[in-house]
Image (cartoon, rainbow, N blue to C red; front, top):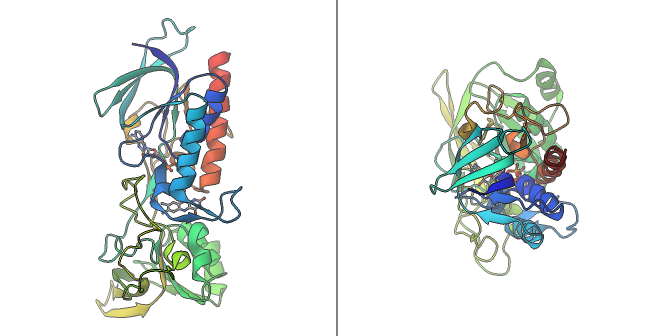
Length: 354
Ligand SMILES: Cc1cc2nc3c(=O)[nH]c(=O)nc-3n(C[C@H](O)[C@H](O)[C@H](O)COP(=O)(O)OP(=O)(O)OC[C@H]3O[C@@H](n4cnc5c(N)ncnc54)[C@H](O)[C@@H]3O)c2cc1C
């Protein structure tokens, strides 16, 4: 079997950026794109307005197609599959360094001198009626990405950890009001975040409460006045973080759904039910990194994020590097994933040529 220089697992901004750098360096990388979402999370959204270089915004699928074309131009190869496992094999014939054996769900097998893990993460879902239907129509999983679209509108955030509080506080810059809903009476978030939230006039904390359903208004009339801005928000056609990528005709054919208008809630202590009007529901109950297939190969934290050595992308295993949302539980943006993909490529290049 051919021993490749480097196999990149994942084809989001981190994976494609690694591929651009490594192919330009003449190292002929191969990208295993993922079977269901080649192009990563951004193929499930419409307009991306915060990726540098596109003052008028760019559609997520177009951005990812352009990244792929740029990687292909310099000689990157692509295989459409999921990696099922990665194992270290002998160091023979590779300057005393380990080699890696990857098994794909297609049955194909690959050997590589270095591996870059860029498999991203998926948002945890509430799992209530209306969540999937109104994803991209008021249901969002990313305040940084979508808060802007809900200026002067009532917003709900669901969650009780630091991320939920950060998102809620951030969203007070945009919303007419922000209601943070948490199923318990106590928060996992740090005391200082809770204090800040309590001190913010725009923010209301609703505890012991769960969202049981999300409702929307009737769809707007088709043609001309497609409300792309309001319809854009994250999760657009999000199918559980593993949506089928590529062929989503997002802006041309608006799905026949309106925007979020209200939610049903239930008090977990009294059982009392009610309805709350809102234009947006930001779900902030955590992420699941797609790293289970790595087994014990590299160190991961308790939530499954790959651990790297300081500011580098080196994992606990020499020759295995990791980048993007499968490492980064904080920033989780396309540009930060791309930046880390660049670092992984440079780290791998140094490792391979040392
Ligand atoms: C709906 C939505 C809207 C967003 N909007 C914005 C925005 O406007 N601006 C912004 O900056 N960020 C936005 N984000 C966040 C951004 O998309 C992510 O931060 C970014 O895509 C992370 O890049 P990544 O390369 O780390 O991983 P991902 O983009 O998640 O890509 C991971 C890749 O790994 C593949 N994969 C997973 N497991 C395997 C496996 N076992 N084998 C092979 N391949 C595998 C997947 O198929 C996928 O191709 C949005 C996210 C979502 C969901």
